[in-house]
Image 1 (cartoon, rainbow, N blue to C red):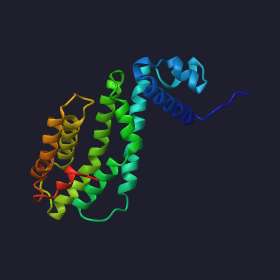
Image 2: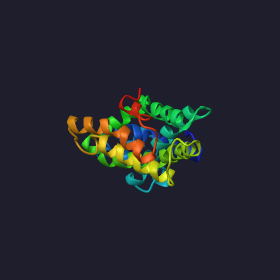
Image 3: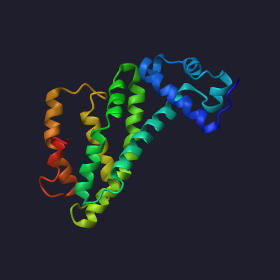
Image 4: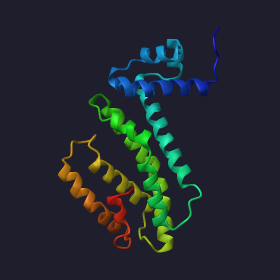
Length: 205
């Protein structure tokens, strides 16, 4: 008996199957036929939703980033306190996302570099407004001072991510250690925040 599913449900099923396959087999080694076999659908069905594997990759990237963003938003919702307390909570929420950490580690495989880069770029673009809003709150509270809270968030997230992620480049332990020591002071300087207010970044847990 043929099971007919709603369009959105079928599309999500394809994306979820592709994500699993991309992680297990690597993106470059996964074919559209592999995805079709896993979901048990015909060629016409998968190409109705995605014109190519690259387009399916984009959907996987967006889906993964949306999952991560939804978790951060849920953790932050209803959280009271000043901007420093809220931004620390947001960073801690990101640190304990084990399933996302596992995904990023899988993407360090050479065959997944494209997915890795695109996922992080999309994730940063989605996270920046969350941090930007908190930075703006901090400016109103007199804790921070910047005329560009969103751009400041983008700059900090992108810079820290690139310079601490060995998936982008095999940074040495010495490079990572010296950057980790400098990050709190650099963030405080960028935000004109009180000295020592971001010292928790050296040990966010």
